[in-house]
Structure formats: structure tokens, C-alpha cells
Length: 355
Image (cartoon, rainbow, N blue to C red; front, side, top):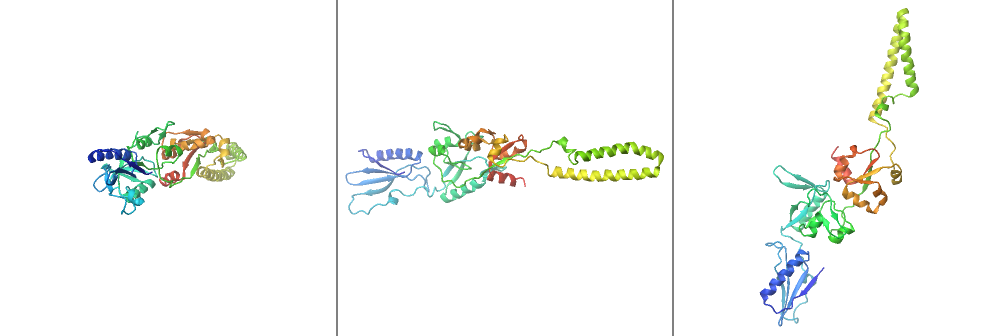
């Protein structure tokens, strides 16, 4: 948006400069840089603008004379770039207040023993590239409140968290898995979407059999009946045979030991297979099956906002007050028939961190 202001008064030049500086200060606080103030006179026309970021100043709003035209005849035509030169292609290492929070793999805040803070992650790399390209220094600013892991925009247009800081000009920009939606774009301006995540639903497996049922699982009922019958015969026949025929007793005892050895090998083999490959309940493969099996969809607060346009998923969702990574870490603690809504980026980082 371009602004052209005509300052037509008879005040002294010093007073006009003071008024222009006040105007430029108001426009700078509103992030309006492309503005020209024209002061017409009897013999000439002067055009002023301001350059907030220079080699010697930051946030400077003092008026700068662009052109002093003594008459329209004999002057070359002014071009668009002459009237509105680029002002933010080089910030000359002026500090930019950047609000970030720890949300790996997008932003990972690391603090050394000396207190030096460094940023890692996808968006941290993008922030470094932007800072180098535009030549500004990054001044990390904590979110308000610091433990807020998301942002809130109220129906009246007011905001809580980083968007409130952006509205009040206490922060210049934020980066780190910031989703673009219509509500946010109405109160702030943002870049084009440069990353579109793929959402996945992670289901928790539930073992079909219980721990006490695992003890009798290796054999079928008929096999267990046969084992019981053989054990009863052993307890009743072997003492009788031992008293009457020692040689026959030895044969029966050896046969009994061979039977026990075979049963033990089979039992341990099946138990090992069951423990290493536990039988799980068949999981839903579609959203319809997810609803029919009465699954609960757990989400963090920021992800749950995306379900506003999906009322069917919203109805079975439950918010957990944590970050997306912390939610994945709680997967084993969730009850049966639980699911987590997350992105492939979070899941990949979670799996990579544990391999």
C-alpha cells in the first residue's frame, strides 16, 4: 500500500519537519513504509520520505528530502522506484524481535551452560537464511505467557500470546509451525505457505489376550487334556510298576522324561513367538471404522483447532495440554481404543529420536 500526503501549511520549515517526523513515526508503528509527503511552495515542490533502517540508525523516522523540484518544465519524469525506493532490502544489522518457542522438529531451542541460546530445526534454518538475506540481527523474545504453546484469537479480534505481541508491535515476526488460517490473517500479515504437513492418525494396538490367558495359549484345550491325562497316569501307574518291575519302571520313566522334554520345547517355542509377536486386535482402516469402534482421538490444543471444519472428528477428540511431541511420548500411557492426530514431521522426528 502506497501513501501520498500533501502537507499544505504556512508554518516554518523546522515546524514542518517536526510534524513530518511525527507522521512518519505513526506510519512506522503501523508498518507503513512507502509514503511520500509533499510540501508545495510558491517556487518549488519538495518531496520527503523516511528510511527507518540505515547504516547508522535503526527505527529512524526523521524526514529525508527526496526531490526539490523548482518547476515542472525541464525536469525528467520521476519513475516509480524514484518515488518509492526499497527500504527493507537491507536492515543493516538492526535487531528484529522474533518470538519462538520449543516445538521440534520446526524450532528446537538449545541453551548452553554459558547461557548462549541457539536454534535448530526446519524453521530455524529458514530464519537464519532470511536474516542473512535481509541483513538483520535476531533478538529472541519469549512468548507471553512463556509456557503458552499455542495462540488464541478471540471473536472480537483481540489475541493472546504471540499474535497479541504482533498486534502491539512488541514483536516483529514469529516462526515455528505457525498455521495460516483466515482468523489469523485478518489481524496479521504472513508469508505464503511454504510447508504443507500431512496429517496421520496413529492408533494404539490392544492385545487380544490377557496376561493370565498367555500361560495356557501355547497348547489347545485337547492338548492340555492329554497332558493332564498323562500326568494322572504317571502319578498312579509309576509307583505300582516300580514295586513290581524295576526294568519296566525305568522304561516308563524315560518315556515320561522324553514327553516332558518335547512338551517343554513346544511350550517355550510358542511362548517366545507370542511374546515377540503378540496377537493384536484388528485396527480400523477407515474413519468410519474408527467411529464404529468407539475410538478416542487425542490431540494437542493447536492441532485440535484444525478439527473445527471436521465436526465428526471433533466429536470424538479430546485435548491434552501438551506439545505434539509430548503427546506422542504419552502413547503407551493412553487407554485402549486411543488414537493420536499428528503430522508425519512430528512422527518422523519422534521415531528418529528413539532409533
